[in-house]
Image (cartoon, rainbow, N blue to C red; front, side, top):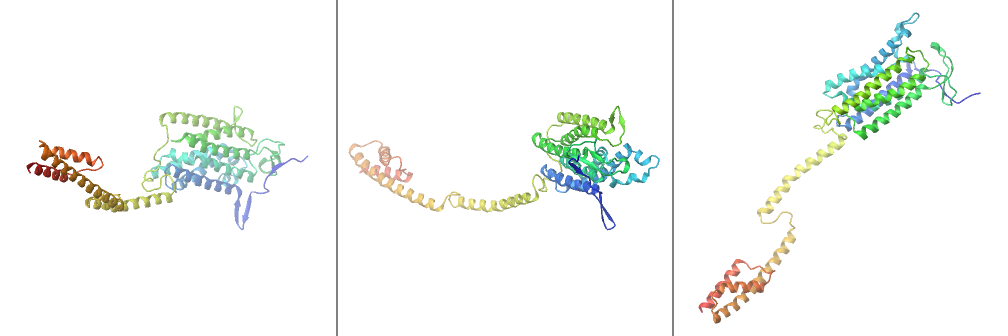
Length: 396
């Protein structure tokens, strides 16, 4: 009875003339590009410069490839140095065999060198790159599919992997596609790190430690399903023990780091803010600079206009038309006040002549103010004129 299954490629190499194009190598290369691209976006969002992630990756990637190959060769040395084996095969990376543990460890050394040269804290750079690294792992695992390797126990599930090659001890049949399980797990870990980083504002290497811990959980149960040759200790494969130890170390780092250095780094790359390459892209920075320049150019002109208005007796910001209307109204009010003051003065003069008021000025002024009302304001000149008329009337 035939079952549904995932077919394996008949061969993992395409030849473009004399140049071999290997599926495994393509998966690794695509994964590196995805990691650098996503890491660059996250680095810029945290206040770093564009291109810094790629510059440091120039150091981290070669170190990581060497570390991954060394880990594989050391832990599976019998494949290259036992009787009947050719040790030269240890250098044939394209045939598969990269240990993620060695890749991360030695890759971190290369990243540290690159960060030190740029004056950048390694934990901050690792946090920015963490989701990209695990997405790169998800893509790289498909290289195992091209090589028909790293599969699990025999199964009849609809998504079983059909192995057709009989080389290197393989037995054709249907097996659990552990490469696919790990690839999907890595995708989930990548989104988990992105969410947790936004939700809890992870910093000082804690986003990277979360990626390591979450990956180890999945790698543990996936590794347990694999049937390829591996060293065993106390009934468990070597990579299972490695995953448990690394998981404990990653969790311990998260706890201790959160207590000693809470929060996130405010500055991840010295000089990035001064150059306008902080949070956001370069175009946003250019727009802000133009706005500031325009404001600086406009301020001297505005100050000069305000100064001229003050010197000429005009209040800054007052419309000239409104000022003219206000002046006309003030003039009309002044004339009315003068007329009322004059009438009041005449009346006061008449009363003073008959009654001999001892303080005619006071009475006249009070009468004028009373008749003018609160809306008409008598000036000092008008009050003086009224007082003079009253004294003349008294003398006469």
